[in-house]
Image 1: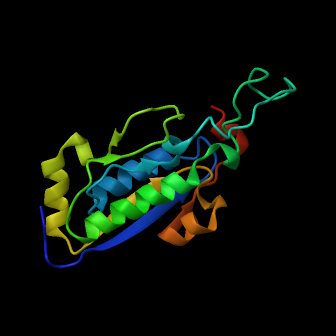
Image 2: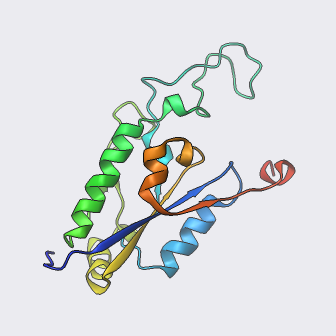
Length: 166
């Protein structure tokens, strides 16, 4: 799984409100571009440690529940660390199998990022192309400059409010 020629790894960011089609676009891009990995959602990096609570009961969720709609609830340092680790490995021709997520998040174990959970298929895509893509998505993706700067291409989906609430 080692290749002497350095690969070019380009990140494509997809952001926008809930219901605008981020996941659908991610699926389409990963199937059409040389993407060795599944798309990686920033939701994996939610961390309850710093997440504020809704306290007034006026929000759409029950009072005193976690506020998932705020940048404070995302462990952006861990997200960037993992994206940089993925980029460094892939530049060397090594396809990562997992992304590590915060221990206080919604998922508490490493998440498989290989396409179709198949390391060999992901490795084959990586070895066949000099330039590969990593698709990342999240509604807060461009809130942080370092995340926006990571993306060679930044897409933002929009949808009328009445459509996103279907």
